[in-house]
Picture 1 (tube, rainbow, N blue to C red):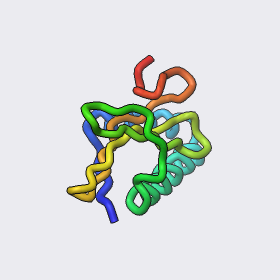
Picture 2 (cartoon, rainbow, N blue to C red):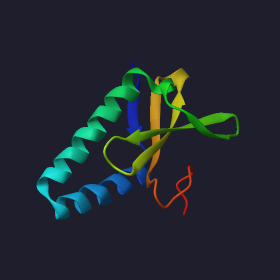
Picture 3 (spheres, rainbow, N blue to C red):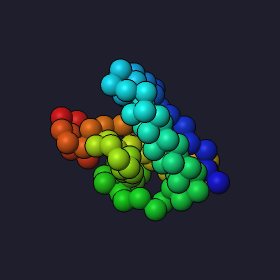
Length: 101
């Protein structure tokens, strides 16, 4: 079992998205929260199941899509610490795999 931790930028990304979806409708915000919870559960159990999209200094950056939303999480797996570090959440329609427009 791995610990899932959010980097500050990812936390800000998710906070913005939660506020945005809440302003659209309560049910949309609930669906987004459930989709995130599902992703976090998958990352706790199977963090290596998702594709590597980039390598930085020998560390694989992986991506998991958020089901039902045009969003994805970028993350690192630190096996020696049993940690998954979520780096960013980005819009897959307007950004490349690194989260930059």
